Length: 225
Image 1 (tube, rainbow, N blue to C red):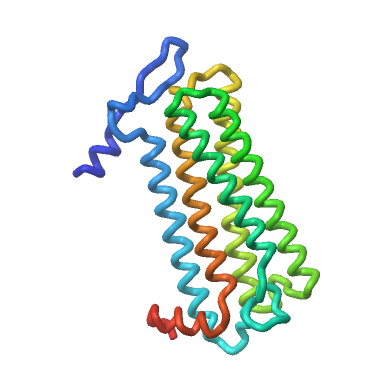
Image 2 (tube, rainbow, N blue to C red):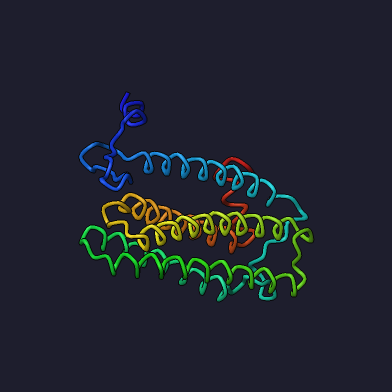
């Protein structure tokens, strides 16, 4: 009943200029409910792909991208660098939300600007990693492990780009004169989304840089071996 009541809440207020601002005393804002649903859908989709990944990793033609010295992710400085960029992007978005609570417009603008920019840097870094792997001969269809790498990182980058579009919209609204209170829900949603994508990336990072022995252990633990 609590979940249903949250869906039927109308916690918004009409502003004098005709815009809509959320009244924090009214309950869970619709944008937060929509975000929770979106994150649940994304999580389920990735979990299902994780299961197929671990299952496929037990076939003889699956050649992991890490383990032996000659494999591209035996040492992964490129992935560590992109991870650092995404951590910084998440920290910037967190600063933006902190600035919202502190009623600091300049901090909000700076936080979402840096967070959005670093997200684009992360996506471009992923693009260079794809080119790097392709040049080494690790094409999309050359090995099931390659295919999953491109699938995982591509889907993650796509979701992150969607978040960048949301940040741009918030940036435009602030530029058009919206107050901090009017964009507070949007900034909080973007911050939550950035933290979620960082956590998801850390899971992907761990999974994609494991050895065949680690995959066998994970598959056995999940009953897939």
